[in-house]
Length: 294
Image (cartoon, rainbow, N blue to C red; front, side, top):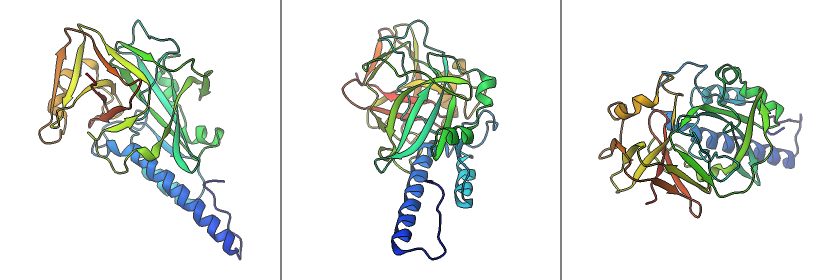
């Protein structure tokens, strides 16, 4: 097993080398898993255990269990997993305010730490009772992966999503909740130890659309880039609602020189990343933003 090293009483050199290689692979996968969660490092623990996204390994060695316990204190970032969309070209109406959740299955693929991303939208709205009953350790074991990550609940702020790819795969069930695989993400592209407000490149092939008349919430960086909130999260503050977002700026620990604001669009806003990577970051509350492209 990937997470369980079988030692012989007198192992050969080849066995020792293989064990060391497997151990390093395990450590590498855990490092990149923690890199996904690090954006909430400054968020504190204001959410309850039931509302906090769980990061759990299938139980094996004591060392893995120790690392798992540490990982469970964090909340996974979704920088690389905001590419959920409908199987048709445009999701309407309505998308804004729709609740969704995600399951990430983490495993090494071709020697690289990777995550398969599954999303509930548009199959269901992530029923609360079912979501709180989800067991990440059981999901990891059932799917034969070292780690499973539960990410949610989250809520869309776009008015529509256009997906460049073709039809989505058939739904699968996790703990009785149907989801669709939306992406496979190479986690080696995610910087280890990155704090909130750190941009990450995501290959998602989508257009995120905000209609004229919609209110958008934006971060303005000192380098001139603007980031529009694409989803808000209840993982840090379980009571956070869309109505609270206009005044969120006073609660954020923004980088020096950055500003946060809300505005009502007089014309449509689109974040077009069909031919280029999206640049995605999160704030202290794990709300996710995309760098505006025009």
